[in-house]
Length: 418
Image 1: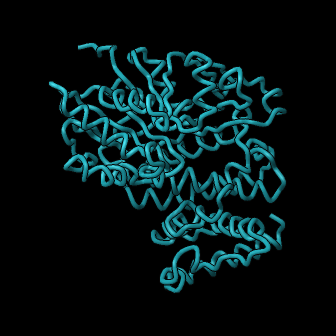
Image 2 (image 1 turned 60 degrees about the vertical axis):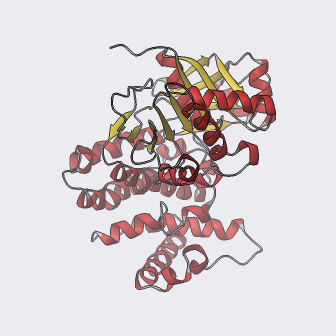
Image 3 (image 1 turned 30 degrees about the vertical axis):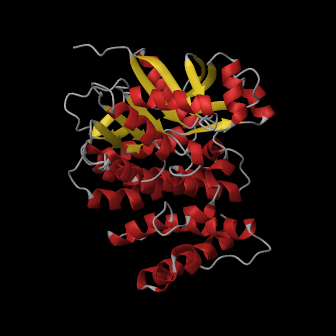
């Protein structure tokens, strides 16, 4: 049976991932008659409204930049009383929704703009309808358990957690988004790449890669058909989330911090640095790759030597796509978070050691990140490892071993001028 085309999509946050992935893919399907996005930045809301719900998008493919115009977007500011009422009505009728916020910490913040409060109000209105229809919500925040966190926050109001099992026909899904994206505001880059602005009255541009193989949790709502059909469901998403965090994200950070030490502006410039690319590929393939293949043998073709090598080759080529022009400063921002106990750098060191490997190359990334963090916070004394990880973790045998590994990598960085 063909999908009906009177579907409604609602997104939270009008950034590069929302605009360059969810709204873009929903628009391309032609299956959504209403596409709504919630945004709290007044200037962004006003600009899109002035432009009649049209925005520009720059898509970096291997053969160049494709310039797209997405139309029919209804942007609403939940801090405006009338917009908020319309947004709640849209949530009540939505078939598919997506959060694309800076962090899961933003789910319950913002007063009238709180995603938790908006969803609670919208889904309460939905429940009062004569025949409430099923809905799924994609969580795009970079957290392995974003759906569980949002579901737990919503459970008291809904009377149940809609994350792992559908509740009243609603299911919240985790995602693995390996799509690199960003917002460009540098006038020189905009001119050089001939990027189209978000709207004619804004001086910023969305630049995203063409990749759209997004993995999502398996949908358990009987008979539910997605309007955005390009996404791929996985019964167990966690292994793929770990491949992204400890493979993709860790290698991106490693490349970024080493590129910064060489004075590079864009990650794409690393393509002309054979030593950097060799370090990144070897770390990706033999450190995190071997560990993940040992952890998840036979689960999926990805977790095999051939499958993981294809994953590595594809991602490294995409990372240095000259049309994407991914800024080094964007990749290495917030080194304190990236040095967290379970985050991309330290988490990868721990994973590799757990499965019998020696993560010497990823340790170079952790060392470079620590040096960068110390420079950023001067003249304030730099945080100790206990401040970054917690006293118990730093004092544990594992923590002491990691500190020794990073100290040795720091000496190697400084001695070899890496």
